[in-house]
Image (cartoon, rainbow, N blue to C red; front, side, top):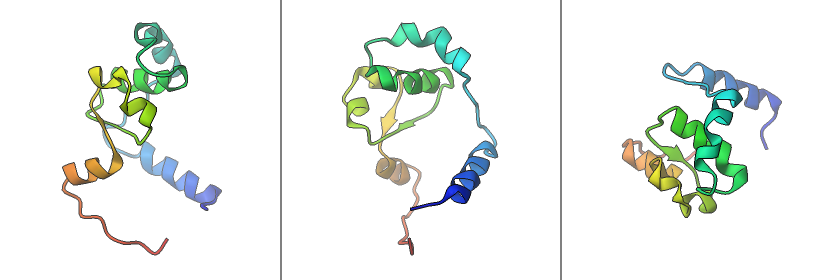
Length: 95
């Protein structure tokens, strides 16, 4: 299991990405009613944030998401498929 320091490092890495767009709760709330019924209620903010940010791909293993109507609004892919799409050759790790 990873500790608090690892989580902090990951957050710093994510916010340092050059084309990062942070979608605020207020922006999600503005559009959430447009997408009710597309995915489960608990997944709705994630879908709306992805649509609002106009992401290229929504990466998830969440079966409820992949089997929902979300794919009508955003391209959905699994981690493995995204790695292949990007042409990244996975390497074994020590952890």
